[in-house]
Length: 81
Image (tube, rainbow, N blue to C red; front, side, top):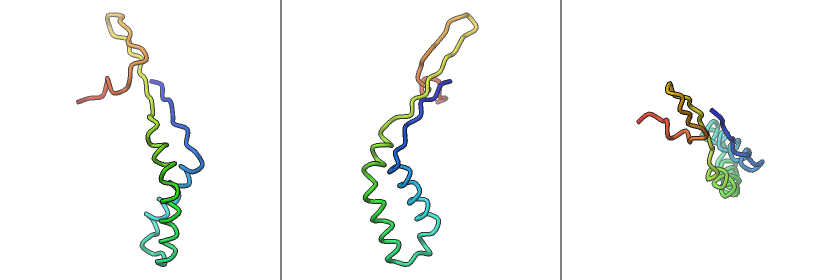
């Protein structure tokens, strides 16, 4: 199995960091601090959405008992239903 990871931008990493901070500590923050954090996240949402649209590509190579080889097939072809 080969995985081709998405390249995460600095902005994408910052969005994740801010989102974690909001999830972990948002309920304890002062209202103004929480508003500022939410505004920073809104400013990064476009870059985050672009990162999410880039697909993680996983391919699989399978050799069957009869010698037949499936190569570079998408992971979804082997997902259980």
